[in-house]
Image (tube, rainbow, N blue to C red):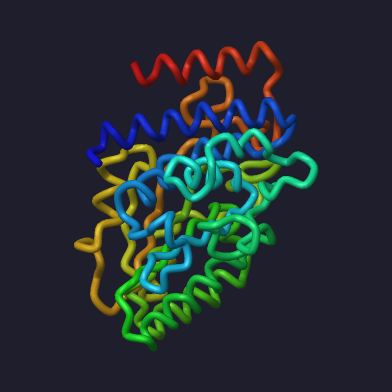
Length: 273
């Protein structure tokens, strides 16, 4: 798909996400808006996955380490055909398998359970190492939040990834500068990320995380540095695409009222015309 087609899909995912949060009365809409373009590019441009064979040993893997944005992943999976589109309306409902955090034994296409922050990258390092041991060609991708990078377990995994030369591993940091309740700069500001990852032996690229062309280029197999894992620092905005949510820490975990919902949908619909 070309970048414009991907932008159309991403916009549709955002609109469905806002509606699902509004209807469920809960969700992490701000972070879902920031990660949507990244997920769209991964599933509709870069990753080799087959909804008809979600456990294909040769598939590429994505670990959504920032598991609280599970709804965005569910909608992407529904757009790709892993689950039915109308199942999104069950999000957070009693007995629904679409919980607030992804569960690999319930939802096809989910590679690992996530929610406790700082766990996804260590798991992804293990996946990438397994592929190397098997001499397999599939790739592993992991998306973390920037606040999540404060977790020490990530830096142990970063050391291991470099030590084992896992050039089949790509870490994407959703760098929206906000975490629950505060700005990254006001808590434990570990930005800038690029020099730190480079010091650990990673190949690093910084991009606009809402520029679909830049995302696709950075994720391409042609952008791999042999012998070195890759980190993409994706500069994004929490609440991207919705004026009153954008770069607003209050929208980490908040539900729009009816007026806000209508405004959000109107702005997203206008953006794609």
